[in-house]
Image (cartoon, rainbow, N blue to C red; front, side, top):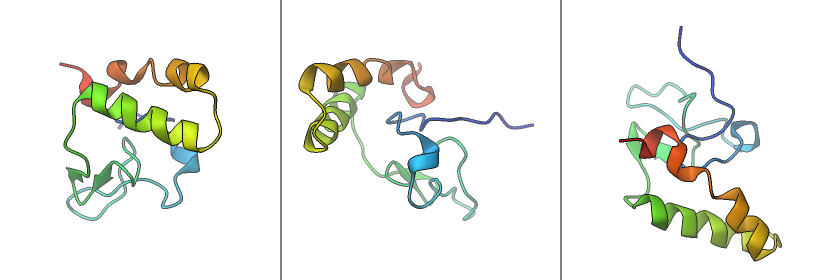
Length: 86
């Protein structure tokens, strides 16, 4: 049985907030691990480091009106997500 994730394991977006309902695997099935912004057709949409992903997400949160200190706090856990584990 495959593990169910509540958050994208690349950017930490809540998967239930993904307008497309999740990314897609290479075979066209829905990914239960990654959002549609991070993962399409079995590949990551952004080739970046964990730091670059944190900065990108932090910027998006600020665009949504979330204060910088709160955006920073919300992106602190990104390095612990599946995509970034070594």
